[in-house]
Structure formats: C-alpha cells, structure tokens
Image (cartoon, rainbow, N blue to C red; front, side):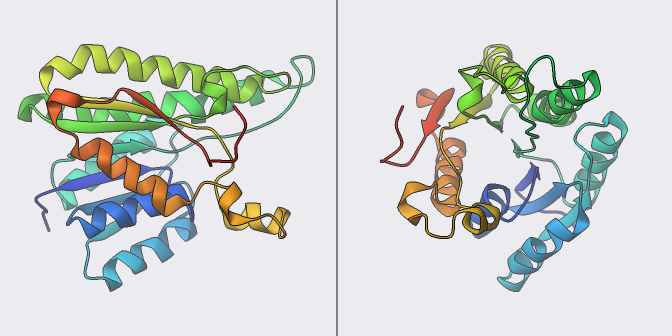
Length: 238
C-alpha cells in the first residue's frame, strides 16, 4: 500500500494529535499514527478508515531512538514517503528545582524536545531529496516563559523552539517548511472537561480549529511561510 501524500503524527491522542490526523486525512493524506499506547491510536485509525481514509497505528516511544527509527521505517515502507511530520508528543511534571529528580528532568526533556529531533532526522533526508516537505512542532506557553516549578516543561519546550528555528534556517532554502506553534492555553480534552466540568468550552482551544491552522501552515505558499505562530482562546490573558 502506497499513498501520494503521507503525514506522520508523533504524539497522537484524543485531542490535537487526533484532530490533525483527521484533518489531513480529509485532504487525502494517508496517516501514520504514532504514540506510546496502541489504545490511544486505534479509535482514531478507525474514524479515519470509516470515512474512507487510510491510516496505520504504530506504537512508538518518542524518547527512544530505536523506537522512532523503527516507526518511521514502517510508515514509509507501508505508506510511502512522508510529506508532513507533526511532532505533538510531550510530558509535564510540575516541581521545584530542588524537588524534581534527575531522571524526571531528563525524561521530560526527552519527550518535549529530543523526540522532535529524532523524528525530524527520519524525514529530512527524503524531504531534501524531493525538494519539499513540512515539519510542524507543537510548543506551549512554556516555550517562551520558564515559570516557577515549570522547569521540566520549559527546558524541553525552549529547546524544541530552538530546534524549529535552526531547522527552518538550515532547510527552508532547500524547500522544507518548518513551523513552530505556541499553544498558549488549555486544550479542550476529555481530561480537561473531567477536571472542570462547568468550564465553558469557548475558554479552551478547540482541537479541530487548531488542526485547521496546522493544515494552513502546510498549505502556505512558499513565498509566505510562517515560522512561528501562537494560538489561544479570545478570553485568554497574555
């Protein structure tokens, strides 16, 4: 099975990752769905296939190089060359500098930053050879501000932003569009709704609307590429 256009989404769940996968599938993309837990991937794969699309689920640990290499090899073998790579994996652990362990600090950095580097290395050679491609990295408020007790998130997200800037400057002239999205607000997820059942939906980021922005980034004309943009609800303070 090969497809004309293929997207790999590393970090798929019931909110943004799944919404991006479904959005690109509606545009005719075959989708490689990647996340650590197979059970997170299966309902999204089914939704895409039920709508006549193509998707495969590939359990992947974004923090382990061998797992990432194997996942992308399978995706390209079964679907074809990857045109778009979206890195949406991440980890969050709140704690003060004197409270968090070295292991926690390293593991969150791996999820928030290293996985983006590992995935990009798998798709860039093919994109460079073809002279086109899109890489989108999902950031956060912590990409810009290291708040107290948020170092585990901020250090990785700062690094991911730097990775996006560096890749854009290196590979933009070679036809690869690299973009970084700062997600500045609470995404509407099942978990968020369960924690605050009375919260009004317009105060959270709608995943399907966010996915429209990711599609727009890919679809931009190369004369007007965006490196970075931020997304937040209208009521969010910033």
